[in-house]
Image (cartoon, rainbow, N blue to C red; front, side, top):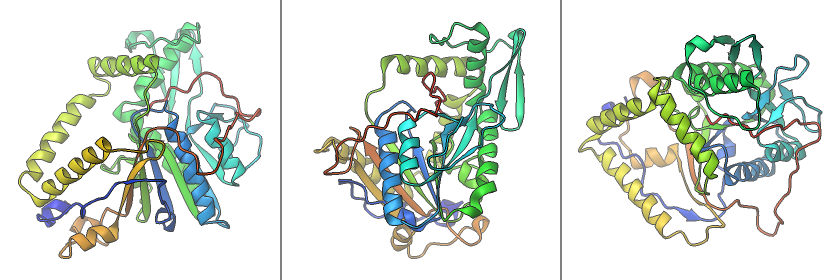
Amino acid sequence: MELKENPNMVFSPQIEYKNAAPDYSHAFTHKYIFISENISHDTKSAPQEVINILKAARNARPNAKILLAQEFLIWTGESNASLLKKPGQNSELYSGYPEVTQAADKLGIDQLALDDAPYYAEDKNVFVKLGKFLVEVTPQDKLPLLSYTECDDPLYNRWASAYQFIGISPFGVLERNYQWARRIKAVEKNYDLILVYAGSGHLSNTSSNDLQTLLKCKDFAHIELLPTDPIDQAVEKDYETRFLKGEQYGITNDQQQNQEESRLQEQATRGTIYKQSLDQIAEETYQSYKNWKNKKLPLWFSLTKEDLLQANPNYKTPNALKNDIVFHCIYAVILAEPRVEQEQKPEVCPAPKTMPIGPKHKSYI
């Protein structure tokens, strides 16, 4: 829609990657900050950078009521467990990133569990909870199985496999996003600043199913974390197996959808100034990555709505958007080694004793 109304639109002025600690100050002028974690949920650099973002948020807004809503804080089915965790409060919630949970505690930041994964089993059948739905999965459904070496219980293995595949299906992602939006909306009015931390599959802000759209956000910043640290070989194999089986059984259809989206994007932008500006960004990213000197610090750039309007003085607001453009404040942060603030020792954050950790969290999206 934007490109149709603005055929000569420049996506951005010439970007400049900085090899330094990111300055997130512009982000904290917005009510919402969405932090998307790309590639996987098993890197060390992404959660460490989230801790740095939390510290920067508290420094920038020392008296603000801040909420961290995250995919990686999960309701485990305990009926007496509150989905909202206050700093220092005992909790029955499960933390996939206990170091982030503990850092938020220390900074006086409330936390909200977005996902839930209670385990239901009945004879040979298992139930997957997605949003307000309980999906029954029987052996006759022939969902592919993944191996979970930490657990020998066949029912648990069947449930965990079903949860993985249904949870990343188009239906599953949408229902989880609906659930997350309901939970955030329920407490939204109590906070000055809300940070939402989740996988990029939930926060791409490109379709009606994304969390930003479901929350009807008109004022937000988006920080995209792009880890480059190596993935554990066993984890990488799990990813590959899940992807291949998901495509083979027609559960995700990601490959077909991505190819179609790429085709339509190419068709719509061929020969336009917009396409030239995208190619320019891609080239600048490649060259900056190639010349990356200090890998203890990220490569990053930011773009604001003001940058877009300055580069496009004749910009016309698309009719479908009425009052505003779908562009607010974007950060792209390429991470290598886990970063800590200068003149500080690496922070060791053991899991709180009251926070059950259990096996490594495997919800990849």
